[in-house]
Length: 164
Image 1 (cartoon, rainbow, N blue to C red):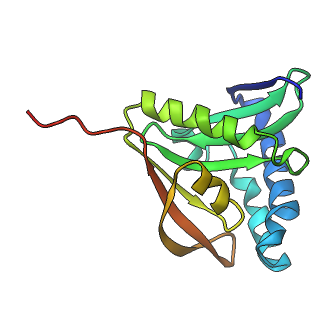
Image 2 (image 1 turned 90 degrees about the vertical axis):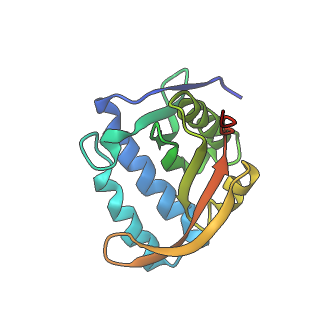
């Protein structure tokens, strides 16, 4: 397995991030959502820009090979909200998501977060459970025009200091 490099995204990465988002939704999430749902969701890739809410308040991480082949990306706030974590369809189940998540959690810890939160798809739910998340609630969220089922999940990553 080639060495995985995780780095901060730069503005020039965003066209590739949008393409990876679309590809992953269409090729991977189609196992758990209808064709109409994934097509609607994939159209949301246009929102993956450095200027878009909530991206401008997130640290965006890119996972790539030494040769510069992008395998996945994630975005996380200092408060511990993981907004996105996508792994290219060709690199599923190779540790890319786990490596991205570990770096995102480390950044959240550095930012003082005590809890990680995420809204995750049916497809991603087992991955997040393996990372120690629990389902807080099932919910629906609007993609572009359709409302899709996902899960609000959380994980405690730090302990509150005892009160003096």
